[in-house]
Length: 250
Ligand code: ADE
Image (cartoon, rainbow, N blue to C red; front, side, top):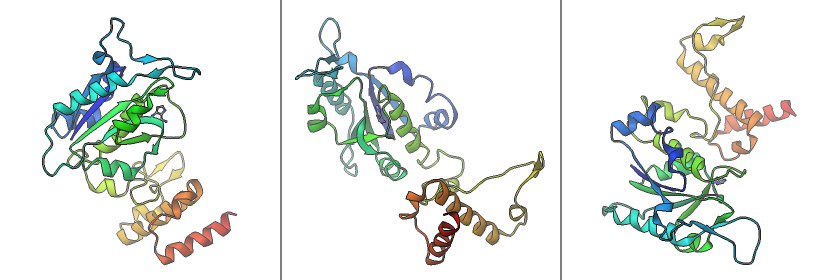
């Protein structure tokens, strides 16, 4: 999979992709990330990328020309196969759709994704209307630019690509994959400062362990993210457990 990140701050991307699973995925050619400096696509002496907003107001707005030109340049270097869908051109902005595990899964099916890191007060609306195919926000807060958001998106997608994680099975238990938060995990020692690992996990009874984990995931989701439970894939019995738990918690 190929990511093309368009940014005013290419140096921000030097370390995040050079360690851990990322480094391995790049070395094994499962993923390629190329960074493109938007400023390189300006033509004036001062390499101007932003300008005052028409109509007045605070802050600067990213000019359309360098962004159109960098996207067109990147696109011209990509040969799409017949099975390729459209090429997503995504603007990272607090005004975008909320990023989610589901969107990460959707993006992981593309061979090429272009990510544009927004900055300043925003980007010229013509970029939104005529260049990007989607806008993504990583949460309801405002970052100083789209760079960290682009890293979040790339990270969440790359770990879903076949062969990137040691064990694909671990993806199934991830928080949010099944619509629930993940159950509590323990490792050795069995007792630490008088705190013990729950008995059931030591029992070797896989059915009991699976049941306990499922209950814990539901309980944790109910306590921390009750909004997720409505959409979670629960059987009737589990729904009834949730209703009982809700009553006991209130
Ligand atoms: N740029 C600034 N804030 C952002 C956010 N929350 N998500 C994506 N891009 C951003």
